[in-house]
Image (cartoon, rainbow, N blue to C red):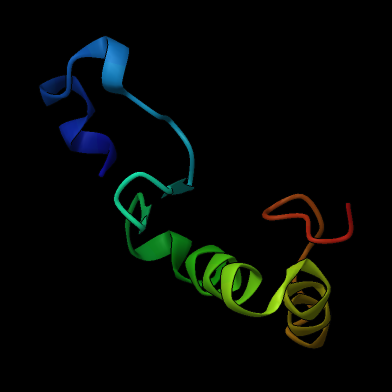
Length: 70
């Protein structure tokens, strides 16, 4: 969560909306405003980027928030 960022040592900070840590089989996010990004990343990991892109397209998301078209 952004307000807790200063509590984390700088070398361990990751300032991304959604982060995947394969070492711990963990997907985490910054907070409530990143719920859609979080859901799409879970879909990406379980079903693949193409499926996540299709879901994002159906949600009519503005480009750039979490671009699954790349």
